[in-house]
Image 1 (cartoon, rainbow, N blue to C red):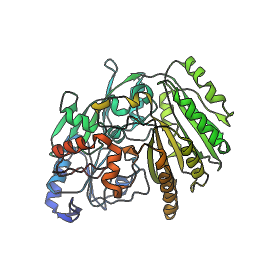
Image 2: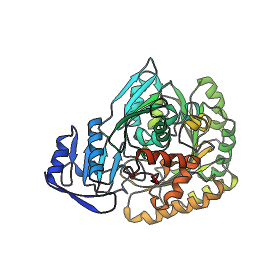
Image 3: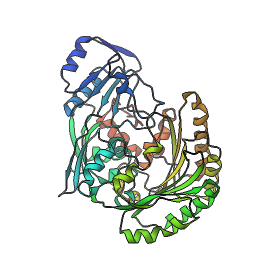
Image 4: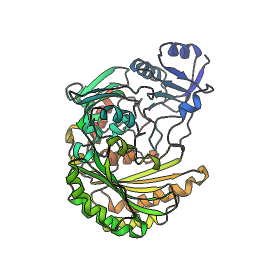
Length: 467
């Protein structure tokens, strides 16, 4: 082993002697990967190709002991540290330049208890892993809208998903977590054990430690009535007006989104995607107006297994593209918002970019309430402005289109933002964080002061300690 030069928390570099690196590696059950190793480039690559960072050390953890040893090593050497679960975030927080990456992607074990209707999942699991295991017993819990997203980041920040109207956010289904805090201690957090920490991780992201496993409440979920209707972009205004009015009185069994994208043939289209989690006959009756409105160019709604629904949008966001995202929360879809969105998409700069309005009503507006740090319960829609392209040299034009729309939408929003949809806007600092966490921010700072006063866990959408 050779000595390693690594980035520290205070912005300088430190040389870690080869003896210290050897001693660290000897404690690991998993793999220590260094620059120059055959596995290095694969290990530092994440879903968003815009992220090209080069850590000094990557630990592919095999279990909790590796996580504890890695946290202790990072703290002892004052190292910049990133934590990787699914690696699917737009911000690319799963990998850092010059520091140490605690990589949980090999920790993907899942155990389902069909009697208690609970599941325990390790933090490297993807939603596809989780859904396959839970659906084997006809069970599921809310879990995003893409199967290749990691359970960890999505749950810790909130967790909007197709089952949310009836069953709440992913974090509303959380019963407990196992977590390694900045002092290297392994803790269980729930409503009865370290309840302050449990409150904080349900919405506070990765600010309080490395969560190594999640315990979820499951619900019976069978065949769903789900899919997409597609309309020409020339009908965009009437489609959005219809969607807004249709969703105002929708039952909790219905979760949906409306948006704009470009087909592989190059045609701009408006679409509505729905999931009805209830009686199939009642779902057919409820969705008939939506399916006949227009009429649409295509009606792709039908009976569907949950695992199929979870993979339906994967093709829109493949790994390896340049990706940039900004977002807003909306209390409703105003006429002005409709005009801004349509005008922007008529001038979209990439055929891979999209604008989505995700309905977050029903149980997602109630959920755990004050018992969790997630604070955006008054929002009814999450607007996701998603830019994607292939040529890195085109980044400026596509990012500008995204930012221009985000600015133009401000008067039509409630001022909040979903923490999982904050992109690389770290330069916006505390103001952006406060808009994400809202009224819960001061209490989150207090808990950060208690469990991570040195801000070891800072390579995230960061809550800064004040001690």
